[in-house]
Amino acid sequence: MSSPVLGIMTLYLNEHRALEERSIYRRMILEGRKRGLDIYVFTPADVHPGGKKIEAMVYHEGKGWSREWRSFPDLIFDRCRIQRNRRFQQLLAFREKYGHLLFLNRPLRNKWTIHQTLLQKANFREHLPETTLFQDMSDVNRMLKVSSLVYLKPINGTGGRGILRIERGSSEANTVLVQGRDQKRRIITPRKVHLSRLGSLLQHWNMKDKYLVQKGIQLQLPNGRVHDYRMLVQKNGEGQWELTGCAGRMGAEKSVTSNLHGGGQAIAMNRLMKQWIDDDDLRAEINTTAEKFGIDVASFLEDTYGNLCELALDLAIDRSGRIYLLEVNPKPAREVFARIGERDIYYKAITQPLEYALWVYRNQESHPVKPIRTTRLASNRPSALKKARKKR
Image: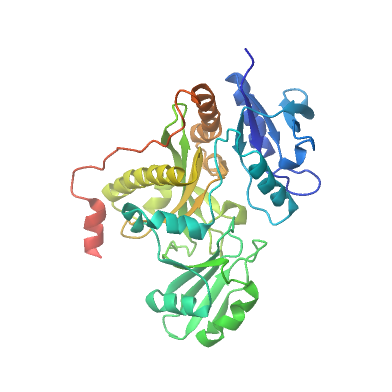
């Protein structure tokens, strides 16, 4: 009996066919082979014009990478991230033409649509920072009246690109400090400007219908650097959602984001949280609440958009222990766990999609893929989260 075939679909980074996660794919191929899963890597550009074969990238120990003409896979693991070029247009055409094939994961929508979708569920609303779609400067000014800190985020941005942080001065009421990164992820020079001049400063960013205006959460550590948490939830070998791991991230000096690609530092979650929250019980409850929340979000989004196999949630936690969802990433990286030395979690992050692919292949007819909702309940003891908020 032949092995099931999994095709990992990605996009080239440039015209030289460079791949961003080649080392991860190599390891997935080797781990898949141990499990009886045949894996190759391809991009939409590798599909033969006749539409029946793929010029796939394969890996063999001792021989390295090579190319082979292969038939279409039994399952597709879509790892394609947004690009602004013709390669992304090829991806959209592939998804349209071959949408009938068996995908482990379907694409999500932009950040604004995801936010609006999650708002439909009452249990999620307390975890969503106040957010609106930018139409003109009145949206920013309105948010600055209710919050001293505001973030402007591209609805399709990744890796911290194009994010701006605007903070009202404590001593100068009509002055704001503007910080952030440009579209190439470079830190821009911080500027203090009068509110009346903020619109002209932001004019060249071309924000209408492309940016979110979001109420900011104060996340600066005593050293002045911002921090947040990257949670990875994945389907396991029984088709159920579970928490794979959660790691802390601390931004580079003068950075308004914590992204590792932007110079951020990975730190074990509990070690980082101890710098922020002293109460042991509160930290334990945060972990429990965050895990249930992450699995619930994944299940709800799968109900809405179709098959998913993994999601990363970027979480912020304020001083009272309240958890906020900053962003959902359907194509998460895994290196944050390797950087903090959690090798078992890193290994699990790589192999869980393979175990899930095998489950899907074996059960695609008798057990259609369905999201699994968690029933885990928090402790019955008085809520440390609620007690902490009452002390504020």
